[in-house]
Amino acid sequence: MYGKGFEQFIVWRIRVKRNLNIVCPNYLCYDTLPYAADIFYHGNLTYFMPTGISQNEWENVIEFPRYCSERNIALPRVIWEMPDKYFECSKQAVECSKILEPLEHRILKISATYARDTNAISECRKKLSDNPRLLEIFSRSADDLNFLTRELFSHIFLEVYFEGGFDFVKEYLETNFSNQETIFELLAAVITNRMNNVFCGENVNYLVYNHSWYPFLIEYFGGQQKERETKNIDSIDPDIHRLFTEIISPIFGKCDSRTKTEYIARTVEKQGDAILGLKNICKEIIETSIFYKNDEVDLRDEKLKSLVVEKVIEPLSYMLSKPKKDVKKVIMDFIFDSTVIGGILNTAQGFSLDTIGLSAVAGAISVGLKYIVDEGKNKRSEPTKLLVEGLKKNRVEYLQYEKALKEIGFCQVGKFM
Image (cartoon, rainbow, N blue to C red; front, side, top):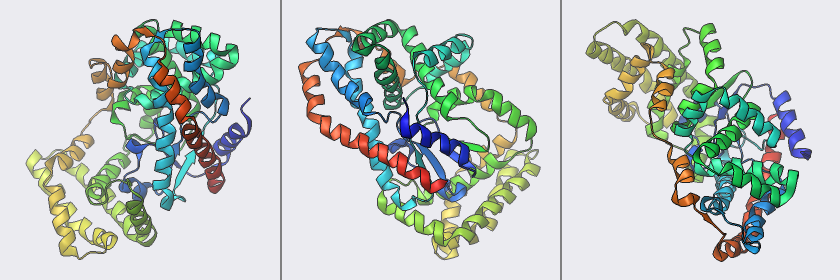
């Protein structure tokens, strides 16, 4: 059933030997374009492209509203608003890929194919029923509506469709969109199934650009995190990365345009030694700051600020190809932001990621899920003529993006073998 794409994905999982820095859990999109600091610090990033590389799936998403319109089938109104969000994922992934082309040897883009049929989703639902905390946190974390829609529709309009055609799809949607609880359970199972199949393995760093996902990811990876923490109790790498990022990000920002990405790519190639030097200095600063943790707050902040000014200016001036006096002004602006310095020291003093997960339980339903379960959007209606005609009109454009997306994922795999 899976074909060439699945085979290439499996080969990638087996043969790639380098440590991976994977953007999680979202696809490549405008919101997940990388910060220059992450390119400098990690050297390479891996993105998963939107799920769904089958033309049958794309066509089904377009044809289902017409099928329902011809038969006067009414479903929750939110379902008729989802096709555009499904295809928006492909559009953004393709356009972002063009922005990142100057970094093509440092950005791996993968199209992942894995089992997401009703049996796989049902199994995840059973496991979620045994872990109500994970389901609860999911309802407060899942905030990317395009991502949720793409994963849901990829499950429904490929696997569910293969099991019984549009009649079964209609029944499946009616059952699973019957109330807020069943919607949450289905979406959580779909995303958890993706996590089980895609985000696993050793020697992997996960980068999270949509921070609303933190509580869910912390809970999901909880067992693995505790095991790593037991083995690496004194690990300071997250603090090193944070200090490096806080220094670099205000200067270089994100790779959000082709021109900026070209500049960042040139900097990586020409200033590799300076980048490594800055990383080592950040490590030295964090190691030294550990000895300050018992000092008074003002005193320890001043010590850390002095270290930053003393140590960072030289390598940063090489990276920017600017005089040290100009770089010093940038650094002085940075150290006056006490939230950065204080935050780094607070992390060293026992900040717990579990706190984030616990606080999420008391929060509100995420914006993305609130949209899906909104009472008005779950009133039943037939697909409008405007929707059916709009999907037909945009079909060529939609499929062009999907085919481009498919080729990007396949072509990238060979470069990293």
